[in-house]
Image 1 (spheres, one colour):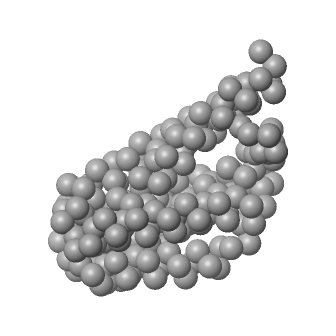
Image 2 (cartoon, rainbow, N blue to C red):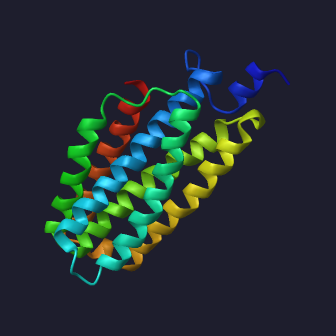
Length: 187
C-alpha cells in the first residue's frame, strides 16, 4: 500500500498536511497542550495547595511535567517550531486551573475530566494517523494517553460529576480545549 493510500486510510482529508509537516504539527500541539496542563495544575495548586486534593493534583502535575519534558526534547531534537501562542496558554492555563479551583475541589476535578477527555480523543487520533516510520512517537503518545485517561478517571473518582453545573462547565472547557488544539497546530 502506498503512503498516500495509508494516509487516506488513517483519516486524512484532502489538504491535510502529510509527512514531516504533519508530525511537526503533532509535536507542536502536544508540547503546547502539556504546557497548558502544567499551568492548569499550577493554578489549581495555588488555590487548593492545602486541600485534600493537593497530593492528587501534584501527582498528576508531576506526570504532566514528564510529558512536557519529553515534548520539549522532541521540539529541539526535531527542530520543530513551538506555537507562538505559548504566552496565551501560560495565562489561560493558570486562569482555568485557578478559576475552577475557586469553585471548589469538585469543579477542579471537573476541569481535569473535561481536558483529559479531549486529550484522550486527540491522542487517539494521532496514534491512528502515525505510520510505522513514526513508531517511537506513536508509542510515546500512547503511553502519555494512558496517563491522561488515568487523570480523567481520578477526577471522576474524586466527585467531578457532582460539581455544580458539571455539564455546562465541562462543555465550555472541552470547547476551549478543542480550540486551543486547533490554534496550536497552526500557529
